[in-house]
Length: 226
Image (tube, rainbow, N blue to C red; front, side):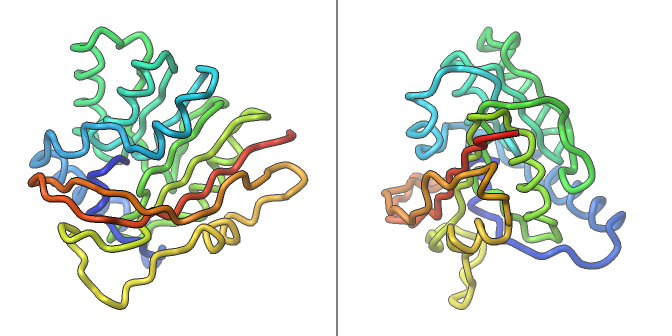
């Protein structure tokens, strides 16, 4: 999921999981059928983190419009992009083909609470992995951490403030801090290390070209051992 996910807010999983899956799939199908250009650029904290790294296998968790997956492939990464929306993954696949990088981009439809792509990865990106619908977010992110190769990185970037263009303007909304997200993951410190946990601010651009200062909650985890 890329910048389009600025419309999403975290929710805990409750109720019937079959119904939740159907609701989530329908919600995001409708979203990506009506959203095209917004979110088609790389998220800046991913670019900042990935630029100095040796290119390897990357996973984009919730690839959305594909800005992150396409950018990584253009830098030389072999990327797997997954999303619950079939429309989203088909469009990312088409865009990769149009740009001549289809050999470096694989896409697949997954409800990540129920299925997860096979393989081991050097970099896993979860950008604004929030949703207004039930989601076992901690479970998904723990699974992602376990899919890293030793030395691999899991980058989680969450909202830390409400942008003026966000659909949710609730003044009482709570955004999980990096420390809270790390605690939810509950990873063994003998096998995973936290390399970064901070809340930087930046100037962001919304879907209509408006700008505002926003806060990102950043957690960068490295797998240090099997």
